[in-house]
Length: 190
Image (cartoon, rainbow, N blue to C red):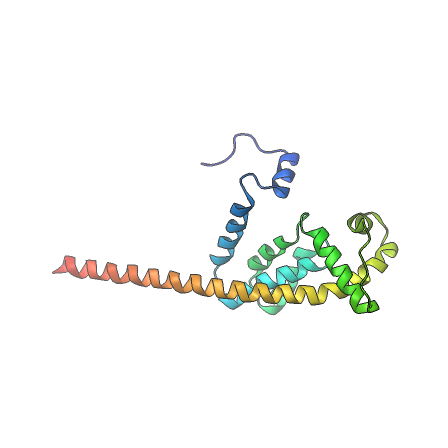
């Protein structure tokens, strides 16, 4: 392989790179943006897939986000790869913010008053039994619905417009290239 590393990175190196990119956050974000723009499919399918991925990442079911995204995207006829890329919004850096937000929104909806999330919400979600986390999951699920729908709708709008513009520009470039090729061919024949 041409660009393969000489030594395969260990588990710690791969985990560190997953949490903190080697080059920069800007480059990582641009990488995912270009991956989405270059997907094959209609702008609707790509945008819907990304929106579904974002929505599923807002839910508190860590470990099942990708499976939920693929199932829901398949049912809705969305782009599965775009859905998988959309789940990147849920990562170890954003989970504390997402969990606290969904808990507080859910508590506000259920109780009618603002309730602050427990100080160690992530620890409680991952280190307690299922019966002990049900009181935490209930407001998080209720809060995940409006927040997830809002973020999914915003994602859909942004991605739809970006993919539409990218595909239209690409179509124009290909048509110009094709026209130039036909002109060059006709010039050679005469």
